Amino acid sequence: MASRAADGAGSERPPDGGVSEALGEESRGFTREQLFTLAATASINFSSMLCYSILGPFFPSEAEKKGASNTIVGLIFGCFALFNFLSSLILGNYLTHIGAKFMFVAGIFVSGCVTILFGMLDKVPSGPMFISFCFLVRAIDAIGFAAAMTASFSILAKAFPTNIATVLGSLEIFSGLGMVLGPPLGGFLYQSFGYEVPFITLGCIVLVFVPMNMCILPKYDSIPSKESFWKLIRLPKVLVLCLTIFSLSACLGFLDPTMSLFILKKFKLPAGYVGLVFLGLALSYSLSSPLLGLVSDKLPYIRKWLLIAGGLLTALSFFMLGPAPVLHIESQLWMFVLVLVLIGFSIGMSAIPVFPEILQCAYENGFEEGLSLLGLVSGLFNAMWSLGAFAGPILGGFLNEKLGFEWAAAIQGGWALLSGLATGIFYIIEATRKSSSLQNSPGNNEERTHLMGSET
Image 1: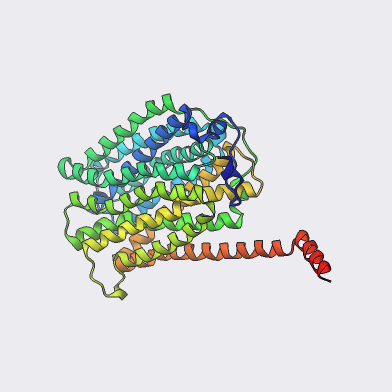
Image 2: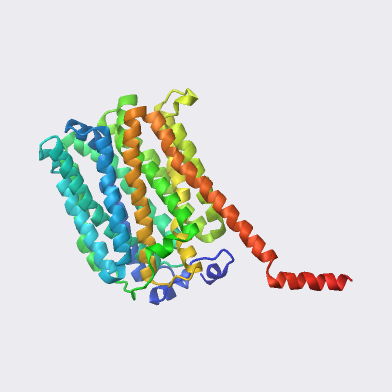
């Protein structure tokens, strides 16, 4: 991997430790610790997305029966993201104090328990009490999820310092598998056994991973650093990348409280089949992510083009999802699924390169290497993703209620359009400044003077 560390694109420098030394010889394959790390993080990717995605096919309609409006359903989804945002900021700062392994395992345990509790909410009386308990349970779930994911990202970056995008992209197969299995499995269990069984079943699956990860996950420790989120987020490039993360998450979050209701109303599908429609997005994202991660690591200079193209393609896809009424195109099921496939691919184009780009920017600006920085970056990534996941369902639920799904989806795509344009403008300015600084450097001036003197 030494060649990648030395190339002109400026790849991430490996943190200290025996794990990074083992990575130096790619031909020998993964070490035992790396394989255990992959297994542990794959389990949280799979189980978290499994639990998260089961809500889509039936929870919005179930919540409406309990007296929650479409906007309130959006707030319930957004509540999870808000507490995830706050928790990620705090936990990212204190990762090295708490311990990455403990935070990881504790987060999985909390998430599993709370998933089971969510299955008990149908016993709560309809109206304000049901809504209040939904908010409470989702908030606790968000804290556990934030702990597990913040620790997961930093552990992966520590174990795989020179090919983090490839590893993250490959692990998105398990995220995609959770997204693929969650909606149809949740819809089937709900239709066959009622509200409680999907949550109890999947909560127990998550809890099975707790003792497994306690045994196999290596312990990664680091000396606490004085660096902070505020120093990191003040970097202009990081701000632009944060907008990218926010916009992608907001677009995905918009679909949670709105898409299943649109499918049920527009295409008259039963709840058990609604989950199958979600497969278009999940499959395209999970299958394309490993390839996008490999490209991002092998050709770091192409990341900026992936970020720009991904944002613009996502915006176009959301405009076509309804489609927007201005196009005067009648929505059809095959076209709806095709657009979801494009959304999954375009979101992968932008989401996969973001983490290594932030990490590279931090190294270029003098941040200390180690698990402490990785905790900051992973916490920031999760926080921005959660902020988008908070805004997306709330805005989506409101717009869907006032304007209908077609216009709401088109407007929601504006976030992706904004991030794609902002990223393009930033990289153009950055390239212009670098070109100008090279032309005005003392070495170039001396060489130009020498050449002019030789000509005379």
